[in-house]
Image (tube, rainbow, N blue to C red; front, side, top):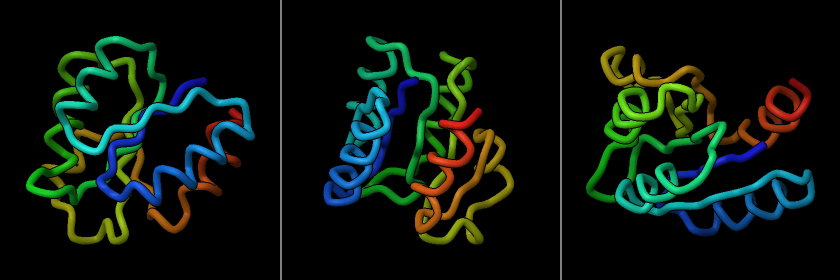
Length: 113
């Protein structure tokens, strides 16, 4: 299984990358939407975990891109607080997960499914 993380917090990506490696998952990381597009175009990605609040960008823009170009990729919105993300933005995501619960979600839902 492969995961793409779009998040501008490199510390978070390092932690998630270590976890994914321990679980035998292929892990890709992008810190902005342009990097994430290149990864999605050039690799077989099953899940895209997308932070909504990026520097000068919104994760929902990448979610919309994936739904149009790669509808087979399951999109997961992941932020410190998903409560202030509009319904219009949420429609581009299959799943919403609080960032503090992401490792548990990956372990219990994605890996075991």
